[in-house]
Image 1 (cartoon, rainbow, N blue to C red):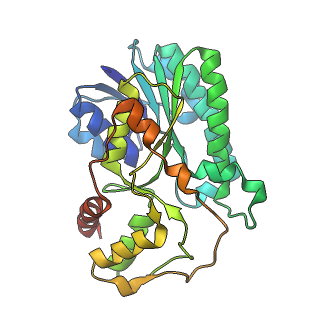
Image 2: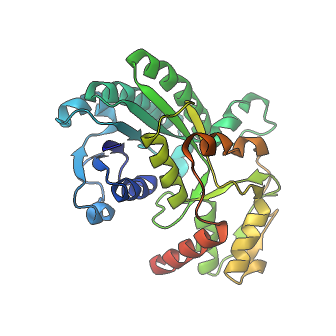
Length: 304
């Protein structure tokens, strides 16, 4: 892989992916929503070409990127991937259309492959009608699942190879959307208890640099499958992860398990299988949860 386009380039995953791509000598064109967006984190990548294009204008992207013959496009852009917007059906449904538009744009620009940011949460959406309780955040997972289905169809229609990267629960420095690790660390650093539901289901927490490495490998290597789960290979019960955060920060008594109601969401251990990714790309996680956690805690101490 020599040339790549990254949408949502100023986001959490975008920053770390560009860092990994440049480390491997890949020339990057970064697609940013508009000139009002904060792109200060990208300043350390002086060779990155910045292109401004709102998601609603993605069908015009080929006219804004004069270069052609890109190897891949990483479509990471997604409005309200975190926060209350995850429960806004109008926002999330628009994201579905934008992803389909990205397929058409990638094909027009001459990309040989397009890779999408999926989520393990979409596996819950496959069975959402049978859940005893339906959390509003299921809207996000349902729309991710719908996107996965539609880009499969559109990629075949456009004649472009696609890979759906099904992410685990990510954490690490520069997270802007927040996550369960970031929430927990922030509460403890602020002197507050971190409260959770039962937390007795299988879970996988992946350090962001390992995610970036896996995404690079999926873009650069010939892939046999159209969907890969990207995880740590260290599946645990969620409460075990949470207690390790408390122990690392020497505040285990501030981790309060079972203080929130059960939202009915259930994960299955088999969803977190990384063996296809390892087999097809040679991916091997480099960071243990403890190592990634320490890096994240150190960074968050500088931000609060």
